[in-house]
Length: 400
Image 1 (spheres, rainbow, N blue to C red):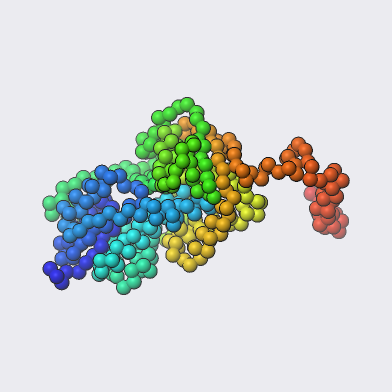
Image 2: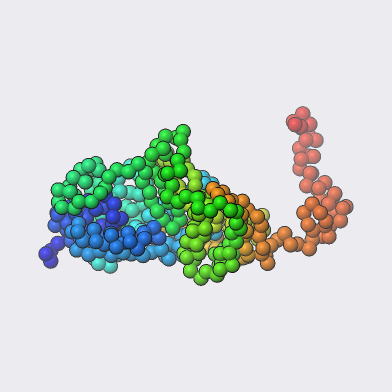
């Protein structure tokens, strides 16, 4: 027993990782099942995971709760950057996987593991996110992927578990879900047909409120400080509160078509009330508190930040540099953004901020000005038109 090799299995409790735990235990490995929680597991699910891990043959089970770390090192910057992939999809699963992989690698190093195993297939992005993180964070540790390497079918995995006394229901469902603090992804069913959208029954959260209401999100230097006047020091709890409110209206539903890391197109449905509401409220506040060029350049680096997260490049050295720029941009993003919620949608209302650049004494758009005269305005316009007057003076035939 003392000569058994240690393997840490990134254990979600699903079919592939359940098979991996049992198969490796049967092959003589000392299996440590580790569930890295970034906010998507309930207490009941974690208890079930622990029970099943031991039934499957694990020597040790551990839950690695990295939800707060995930917020501090990723979600915070995605809010600062208003990051939505393809201007649509909150980067939820991809960013979660990175932090789950980091937690697993850290645990493997702590216990002196010889190998790390995960249940990814060869057809998706997650294999890249896990493998790349393990290669960097746990160099020299073997990576085992039974489902990918042996091209296992669901039936083969289920049969093996049943034949070895683990009788669990892993029936193939129409839809598969990945639930996290930053949204729920939905795959399968109608999503496989690019001409169809998801029906009501595909969503986990449904409309329970009909009356319109206002949602007021207060930010301090870009981070959530209060929700409808209720202060929050725990930013994760603030996100969960906004999710609770938005989900009751069925807000945040959509489908996204994107480019996978491996080069094929992928389509995913999702419901993400909290990210959609938080990002739009934050964007609304920034419109009033940031200068034109602050907004422009912040948007440029934020696009790269989101892309690098999705492409499994979180460990690229440029990421802290981008985070520093995003953090600096938030120094005046303080105030309250107001949204109006209704079933399946919302609209922006306004902002209340001490840093609102609309409150300038120099003038009020479309109304009055005190910072310049009419002659000043006419001279400014004439100078502004100079390059165009020069060009079309020489090329009059090109006037539209």
